[in-house]
Picture 1 (cartoon, rainbow, N blue to C red):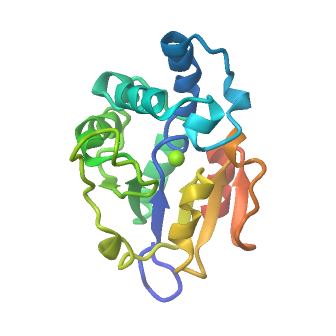
Picture 2 (cartoon, rainbow, N blue to C red; picture 1 turned 135 degrees about the vertical axis):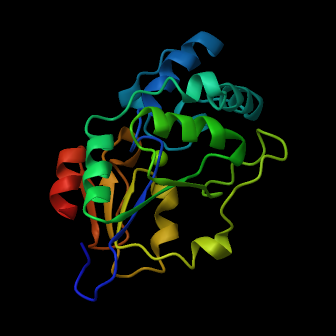
Length: 206
Ligand SMILES: [Mg+2]
């Protein structure tokens, strides 16, 4: 299906905490590594070092473990994610998963998508958060310059730190996946809608 000017509908989908429950993985890891009890609902900041009060060494250690294939492949799918993305693909929409994970996590991330019936979505690693320190020489697969040449009609994102990547698309409808770390943030404009889950996202996109 095409939109009014006969152009394919293009959708940006973030990976962590949109397609899968990444945030819910961390309280257990923090407890195991540092003995701290901080529940998911208390993760008030997208910056995990801030949410869990970690120094830079602790943060790097935790992030290294969290980016190992074993961890990445263990994240649960958010209910309805794969079903929704496949319903869009069936309509001929183009779906690109744009993750802030480094390229070193690409293979395991691709495998996660394949295992969750998402073989037909594209996957790109974009340096959204400046996370290039904790894994040496990891790199990213999508350069900023090339990202800015892409066009999207809708975006699904949970991180207020990524909203700046939408500033160049004034028509873009952004669906913010409701998470504890984005509940207090101010949306940049009226095109942003808080969504409790994939049912709501699917309603908005059609
Ligand atoms: Mg995310």
